Length: 585
Image (tube, rainbow, N blue to C red; front, side, top):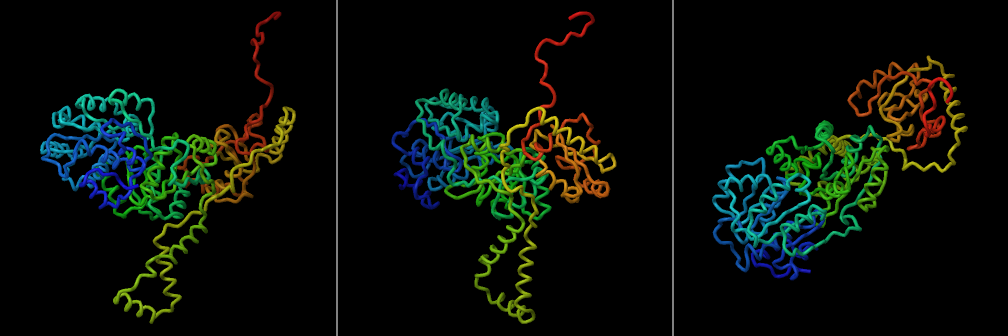
C-alpha cells in the first residue's frame, strides 16, 4: 500500500529515501480515525516509529504549506530518553522535513549548553531533547513552549524506567492545553497508562505489536557454554557470523573486561558504558557508523536508543534481567525490514533461567553448542572463495604487478601467500567444550533413606581407601546451587590446570563449592598452572580434604545436573523441644 497524500514536500523526501510503502505503525497513524487526535501507540523497536510520529504531526506543524515560515518559538517538541536516541530522532526528522526547510534544534546532556541556548534564541520549528536538558532550558527561560502545537514522548517506558517522571511532568505542565500529544512506548504498562490519562484527551490507542509472536525478523539462538568459557564463546560467535555486532554485558566492569579481551585478540571493537564522556561516546558511535569498528560492547543503559547501520547480530554475553530487557536488546537488530540474529550465551548453571526468560517472551529459540574452531575455519575458507575481490577486474597497474609476481613464483606459492594474508587479519577461534546437548532428566526412581545412607557410606569408604597421600585437594566456588556437574567441570579443570582427566581423582559437590582431588604426581604442575587464572570468576584454589561429616551430593547425583543432595538423617523435629532439665518430664 503506497503512502496516502500527506504533503508534497514530505512526499518528495520519502521518495528520495526510497520509502515506497508505510510500515504498519506508519499506516496506523495516518488513518482518518487518527486525524488530529492524541495517540497512545505501542510498536516494536525498529518498526519506523520516528517517521511515524514525524508524519503524524505534519498537519499541525506544516499543514498544506510546502515550506515552513520564519523560525520562532517551536511548533513541536520531541522528548527522548537518551542522548543517542534524541540525536537519531533529530537526524530522521531532518531528512523528513528537509524539503520543507525545517529548522530542528536538539538539546541533550553532555553537549555545549551555550551553543544550544544560541540555537534556541535564533528560533526553531522542532526541538528534540532529553528530559533533563529540556527542563534546564525551560527553567532558565531559553525554551519557550507557548506556541507548541504537538508534543511527542518517544520510548516513554524507558524515560520512566530511567527516573525522568518529574522532569516530564514539569515540561508537560508548561505546554499549552490545546496541544496534541503523541505518546509512543514499547509497552503500555500501568505507569504509562497513568501518564496518558493525565496528559492526553480522548487518546486513540494504536497497538501494532503482536503479543503472541516474537519479532519476525530476528532469529533467536541459544548457545550452551561452560561457565568459564563465556568470553571465548563470544570470540567464536563473532568469528562465525562475521557481521556488525552489539554485545551486551550486565555491568561496566564486564564491558571493560570484554572490550580489552576482544581488542587484544584483534577485533575492531568499541565500548559504550555510563562512565564515558559524551565525546568518547560520539567517537565510538561514529567508528561504528563509518565501518572502522564492527563490534560494540555495551551495557543496557548505554545502548538505549542506538540505531546502528548493518547491525546483523546481538550477543547476550550475560543474560538480561527480564523479558523487557531481552526484547529491547534483541530489537537493536532486525530493523527496518532487515534480518538479524540474537544469540544468548547460557552457562550450564543458568539453563533454567534462560528457558524461563524465553518462555515469558514467547520466543522459540534454537539451542546448540558453541561454534567450533573447525566450523569457523571452514566458513573462513568459504568466505575467501566467495570474496568479491577475486572477481573484480584488475587495473593495469595491478595486472602488471601480478604478472611480475607469477613470473617469479608458482601459482601455489601465490595462493598460499593470499591465504596467509587473509588468515592473519582474522582473530584465531577458540577450542570450546560442548556437552553435546541439554541434560536428560533422570527418570530412575528416587532411592529411599536406607539406600541413600548406604550410597554415602560406600562413597566415604572409597575416599578413605585412597589414603591421605593420594593427592591434593582443590576447590571451585560453584556447587549444587549452580547445577555443578562433573560433565562440564572436568574439562574446565583440565584446561585451567593443564592436566588430563586421568589426573583428577574424587570430586565432591557441595551446596556452594566443589572440591576435587589431583593426583600427587600432577599437583606441582597443576598448582603452577592455576596461578594464571586467579582473576576468573570461579577460580581454583587449594582446599582441605573433605571431612567425614561433610555432606556432598552422592555419586549418582553428581552426574546429574540439578541433582540435589540426598536428605540425610532424620527429619527435623517439628514438635515441642525435648525436655532439657533435671527430674521427670
